[in-house]
Structures are given as structure tokens and as C-alpha cells.
Image (tube, rainbow, N blue to C red):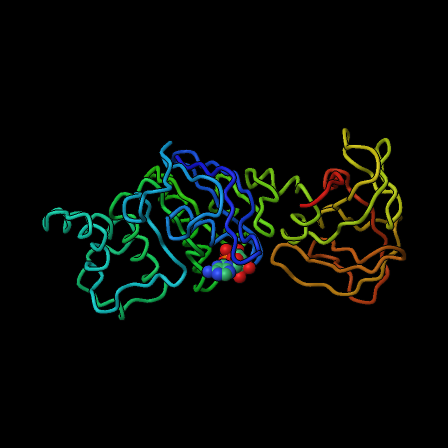
Length: 341
Ligand SMILES: Nc1ncnc2c1ncn2[C@@H]1O[C@H](COP(=O)(O)OP(=O)(O)OP(=O)(O)O)[C@@H](O)[C@H]1O
């Protein structure tokens, strides 16, 4: 459906997007994820035709888009601030793309009603936009983007402004909706929770390049680099010398999964793999945070950097207490040393 080949965008001397190759299949939802300034929005604007490339090609349905203007690309756009037209009612907003397409009035009305039904706002066509809550405005913006049946829907921080609870609900709704409609989606977010909940595939960006692409599970289970691991919020990363079955680290010997590459690498231990034990690495509890079903501990070990651990609510040690921990190899990932990213 969408293919980017060697796409670069330079502003002055700096590459905001640097030689990106990316494919999005029909019916697939791909989320671009990355820190601020990593080039996500620029890439989206390139696909939409709002940003010329310095190098590379953009193909939609196999056709080069170099000379195709924005309104002929057949892509739908929904931005963070959803930019509804304040002087039009809900129906007028949703009908916008249909008017642009020159659809007949009756067809517009039928499609608007269908879309409002779809996004959970049946019969809201006459309401003024100003009377809607943030979440409702988001739904209207989505209905407006979907109304002309774009072959590719692009979302830039679609839930950016909303509070967390609402975002978590909407992201589930979006996913269900896209699955049901078979929409092809390219979305941008800097929130990994959102990306992982929404996407069939996530693409982690760093300084204009792809640091890792894979299913949410693949990326979560096997971050390709220390950058990706830390971006996902995993802070237990240390240098390690891996030999058969275990690794020498600043925390002492840590068991590693079978088949881990030997040699000088980085080692990640997910917090769930740092377990309180009768015997093991001596640590002092620096802090504990209740996180619903478990407690997150920050530990100061006798040697090496701080460790994040998880334990049950019952019997969670208090700050200042001394504990011992051992490592569960199933939660250990050896990250092969490689040049950037
Ligand atoms: N029109 C422009 N002129 C000059 N520099 C730009 C322009 N647009 C973007 N940039 C720069 O390109 C880089 C990538 O920006 P971009 O907005 O694509 O990042 P992003 O990953 O979407 O960030 P955010 O999450 O903050 O929106 C940034 O360093 C930005 O300052």
C-alpha cells in the first residue's frame, strides 16, 4: 500500500529524516514512535505530500507520488489539535472531504450519518462543535478523516490532548474500528503505551532513522539496542561479558537465556526478572511505588547501577530495608553490541 524508499528530508544542513525505508501493507496499522524531534511528523507530512523530500521515493499503491498533490493522494489526515471548523456544526465538519470530492448532497448526508454512528455519536450532526467534550471532538475529527474513505489514514498524535483514562479507552475503540473497517493506518505517537495498544507493527525512530521495526511483542521482548530499551522505559541496562549460560556484569554474574550471543554486549534485565530472594545480590531499597497489581522498587545494589524491580504488594520491603535479589533468565535480554542506532 505504502512504500518509502531511501526517504531523506534536510532542513539546512540537518537531516530530519535520514534514508528511511518503510513499507505499510494494506489493512495494517503501523505506529511511528520516538522521542521529540526524531522525525516522525516530518515523515507523515512527506507521505501526505505536505513536505517535499530531499531524496528518495514515496509510492502509494505502487505509484510514485512525486508529482501527485496532497488532495489527489487519497490519504486522510488527523492531527493532534484536530482543527475542527468552529463555525460549522458536527455534520458540516464530517462532510468536509465529501464536499471537496463533489459528492451529491443526499450522499453526503447519508455518509455523515453512517460515520457518526460508527464513531459513537449517532444523531450529533446538528450540534455545534463548541458544545462537544474533548473526546467527542476527537471522534468527530476521526469521522471527518474517514468520511472520504481514504486508502491510507494518517494520525499524528491523535489522542495527544486527552487525559489518560480517555486515551486508553479511545485507543481500544480505534483499534477495533480499524480492524472492522480494514483501514490502513500510519500513526505517530511519542507514547509507547498508545503505540503498542494500537499497532500491528511499531517503528521506533531515532534522529531521523529507524532504530527498530517489529510487532509490539517483538520490540517489547527483544529491544534491538540500548536506545530502544531505554526509550521503552527499561533502565536496567549494563555492559556485560556473555559466556555460556551467564554474563559477567557490574551486578555480578547474571544468568542469560539459552542461545544468547557470547562476547561483549549490553544486558537488559526487565524489572519482573529482578526477584527478592533469601540469598543473592545485596541491595538497599531506595524507594517503592504502588502500581496497582504490583510494587515497583528502586534498589541500590552493593555494586553496579541502580536496579528497578517488581514485587507483590504483600510483603513489599520499605525504603531503607536491606534485601537480596536474584535474576530470572527469562526476563534477561542480551542486546548485541552494534554501532548506532
Ligand atoms: N519546517 C522545518 N524547518 C526546519 N526544521 C524543521 C522543520 N520541521 C521540522 N524540523 C526539524 O526536524 C526535526 C524533526 O522534527 P519532527 O517534527 O519530524 O519530529 P517529531 O519526531 O515529530 O517530534 P515531536 O514528537 O516533537 O512532534 C526536528 O529537529 C525539527 O526541529
